[in-house]
Amino acid sequence: MKRLLLLLMAILLPLANFAQISYQSLSSQKLGETRQIKIQLPRNYEENKDKRYPVVIVLDGDYLFEPVAGMVDYYSYWEDVPEMIVVGINQDGIRMEDTYYSEQNFLPEGKGAKFFEFIGMELLAQLDQKYRTANFRIIVGHDFTSNFINYYLLKENPIFQGYINLSPDLAPEMANRISSSLNRSASRKWYYMATGSSDIPNLKEKIISFDNDLKNIENELVDYKFDNFEETTHYSLVGKAIPSAIEGMFEIYRPISTKDYNEKLLQTSVSPSQYLAEKYTTIEELYGLKRKISLNDFMAVHKAIEKTRNWEEYKELYKMAHDNYPGTMLGTYFEARYEEETGNPKKAMRIYQNAYGQEKIAFLNTDFMLEKADAIKKDFGY
Figure (cartoon, rainbow, N blue to C red):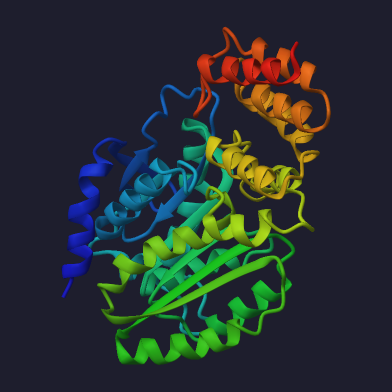
């Protein structure tokens, strides 16, 4: 029944071992008891003293923590998503109490209300105090706990920006409440929901109906994604849904793809250097993360400039390269290419020569830069 999920865990657990995972007991005044949590810190958390990280809260942490933590570690290793702090709350045997809601108004009641406050008022506060957290939070749940995570979305100022709903078992009125909340949201939200062809029939029917409602949301601040996976059960869909949700929530964070290169950077109406600058400004605005421009993205823009012969684009690109990779040959090369192609070969030659002693990067090294200078010297007889 859970073979796909177990296979995913078997693949990802060795990767997760490189990250820092700890098992902690957290005393809660709201609950009047001690709760067990798991925390995965990014691989180089201790070395990066000035870096802050988004937080992922995983309900049903006794079985959902490992696949979520593993996928976060895997995707962040390849820089497709930011490194994140992943926190799993163990709920084995008590998930029904934690997610309890009133039969009258269908809102958290009793232990459910206390658990709601535990996460929002105690757990997140302690994480913010103890770790270097960024102001971007995601919460993950499965069936009953998936319904529960949506109660945070109903607050006037939700403390989570991303919601990963895995086959939610929605309380009465919840679908209408979520639709209303997303429609009137004044801040950016990412909402993901998944079911499968062999999901529990009653749940699947309601989820598909709810999806039809969410498709009509016109709020541009809401990023909604839905998956209905073929040949997956209520449990095995988790293995496919987690990576799909993570990819969707951090689409703009990923390096410039071949599709982006062909459809955007090669269009004459698009300024490649401006596109690059706006991409990273948007990342900072959306996720609260000031990210260094990746070498991959610099190379993609460089390739587009060479392809379109839009040499003026190098002027802004070399400034960004100097800022992001000071002391390397990257900015020097782009600056030399700008002068070389805009009618200043002698100045370009000198800039190429100035690369001597700078740090090599990508395909750029001392021999390459001096060869470029010598070629200009030979062509123009300097």
